[in-house]
Length: 110
Image 1 (cartoon, one colour):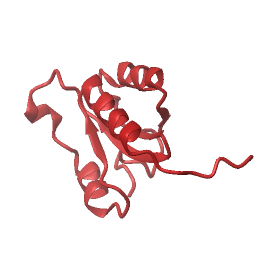
Image 2 (spheres, helix red, strand yellow):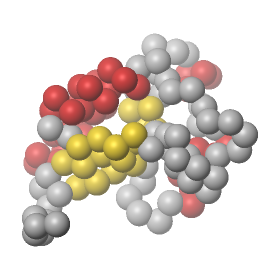
Image 3 (spheres, rainbow, N blue to C red):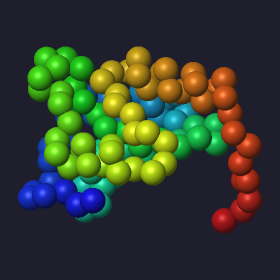
């Protein structure tokens, strides 16, 4: 699943959402610029991982629609359904879910 054309510009709220998520203790990898990454972030907390598309919640719904590449990723992804984060509340909601439903994980040395 490759992005078509040039790389897209991050949503205006992406940097603030990444900073907030990291303050919560969520690991955040920004993958928006990778050729195969049609979504913006890979996040992890309490043994759980997720893929996130950031949309600017301050914009009207018509301006927050998924692009064609994002739609392909959402429908083709065989793992957990990707999430859409519009604001800090979405990041906090996912973090709370992870706190309440932690997964055991091997923390072996790399």
